[in-house]
Image 1 (cartoon, helix red, strand yellow):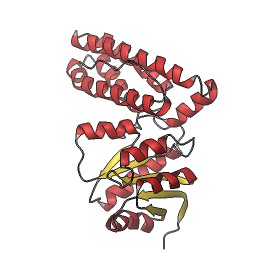
Image 2: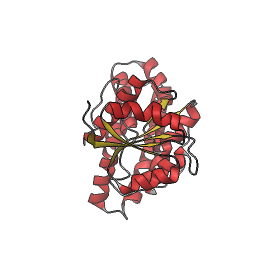
Image 3: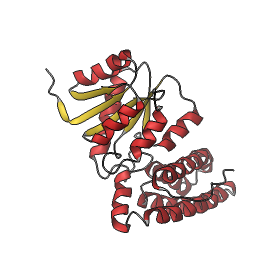
Image 4: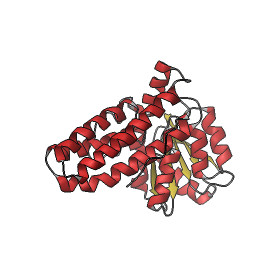
Length: 264
């Protein structure tokens, strides 16, 4: 008989008893403590009460959909709003995926959910949340979070809540400037120059917790130093997309503002 892992309480938000069974039952059998709620408002209320290590939610929740619920959870004070949130969905195109990431979702699972995929994803993100250095080091084959909220929480503690939006605005403006410079180097076929710009963007991204962007530009830096212009061309759209999604998230969650990036 599995021991209940009370350290890792999981909140499952789904309006279908079938989903409670297909998602909640395997997690309970694996030893997790699972609480199920039927709609967005109750999911927010439960998350605000604290004590959860991860949230799983269906994107088309009644009352408040998955993206709205995620945004509301992310606005909760630290640490209630700083936990992995995984979306459950039947289909998801690239545009929807980007909107969900910008709302604060960390990852997605396609329904019906394969039991092994579910358990692996939950274990992966719980491990991530337990690691205060998550996203600081590149882990091949493992997607980092869009932002590391522990990094931002520490930054807020260091500079104060009033100054944080202003500092993040400066970061957004600098990121957009660096993106334009990086794009110009890639278009010009200047692989070493692109590597230098990617290195600078990697440093600032790490400082401000933009971990998915940091990993992507780290790969661009390595490709540029290797003189691999074709790989730089392949990576550039991904980096542009990550800049846009990361900036959207920081604006929404932390009140940072900056001109919309110009995406070639």
